[in-house]
Length: 198
Image (tube, rainbow, N blue to C red; front, side, top):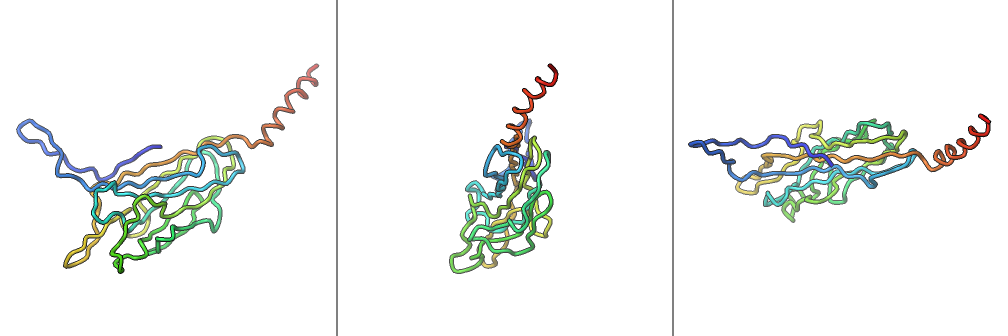
């Protein structure tokens, strides 16, 4: 799993000493896979988990995220995009040839339960089918809609969205191996080739 951080906080230098600024509000977006290794032709699930690492009193309640895969060839499965039962859409959602994207929020946003967090939940997922051997890297990214990748909510006289000072994006890699039938065919072909050379 590989991590990429954005919007790191500033450093303050004073009298030759370097210290970090006040405690930062840090959120994490993690791409997950239902299997670390799959065979060619096998279908697997990619999910997106959000968390604020206990930094915010209210936790993640809004997201706008994109997942993109690269590397070995694969196809996304049409109509496989699904959402956690606690998630409601606040923007668009779609399957792309190389991944998926969605903008959503907790279904109780500003409701009776006052914004329960989505921390630790796979807010959405989709399926993909491997079509060649190799590695496929799936990277979670800031989405293409108007919201920031993840946000919290500040409650007061006025309820306002809260941006995280830093968002860490973590990717996941799926290894693709030959299908069992292809491996058997290859194994059978070796003695036949040997006999022909004789």
